[in-house]
Image (cartoon, rainbow, N blue to C red; front, top):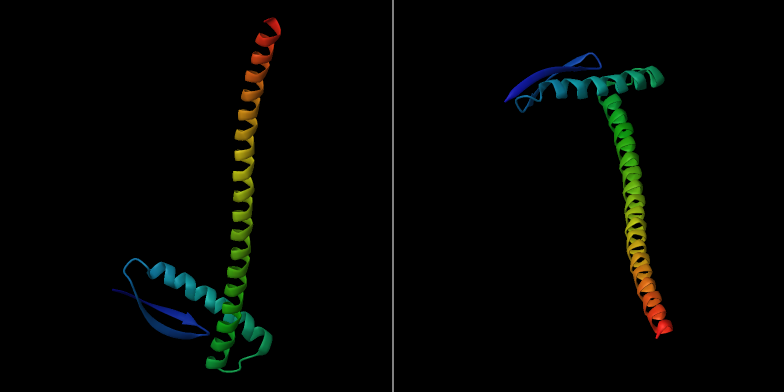
Length: 114
């Protein structure tokens, strides 16, 4: 098991993680620290716990909004896939109709010669 020490709002936190995940965890902590610093610049130093709670709320709000957007994109993709499938079926049907029309013309020509 790996372990790293991350710094958020000038406080060090030792964090355990799976081996190989240390760099990823450090990157996540850097993003949290960036957000805490932005918030602290906006509202001042209101205490470690309050800053972390406020930052967490802002991050989860962003996450939920992103999930909502992803779901909307999935729904649009599903609609487009449905449309694409219907178009493919219609093209296949059009091909069959053309084939049948050709056969009917052949039959009509043979009957006309008879």
